[in-house]
Image (cartoon, rainbow, N blue to C red; front, side, top):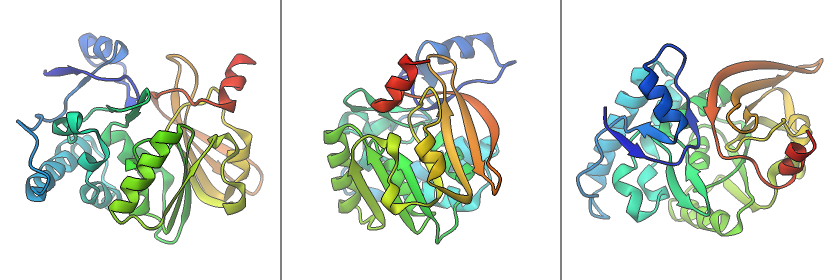
Length: 263
């Protein structure tokens, strides 16, 4: 098994029963590459080679692990992940691991992007809110699945760079806001889905309240090592919560940090 040092963020942790070595690797900040890194990144205009690497990623890292949502697979297969990572990381763009994007943040593991998009259950006319724009990659994938994407990033230079990348690549149905995502985007609510790409210690109440009845909130919840990916569905009578998998994301900052200190 080939291992590469990587930020421990936005990954699905191994289930109990897998090899102990793999479990330890995940917990100390290593991830399986999932695919062979490209031996030298293709030239900027070599989109055919990038597309081939992307197609292998979809088949070998996502579909092969049991995720069969064809709309999501098509979206992941369309969005050029290599355009959302620093040039120094591009040869790893289609391996199954998070990658650093600056300012202490990461671009998520491709499998978990696909998983979270599938869990959101989006239709082509839906409106979705993302908290934690990061590189803009996840928002780009969401934009292929929904009619409108609103995304909020608390790290201003990261958000501005993501906005520029999204605009340059033609993702015209994505709106980016710089700010604390704890309060959501109230003037655009309600949303058919809300997706968080950072982990709050507790689910921010404003995000729940901005869900449409029947809408889903996909969120990693918890502090430290105790994080769990949850899907929370708003019903006519309240909210229903489903636990999906143990995960490891970067913590949600801003007002959410106050929630952590007050626990």
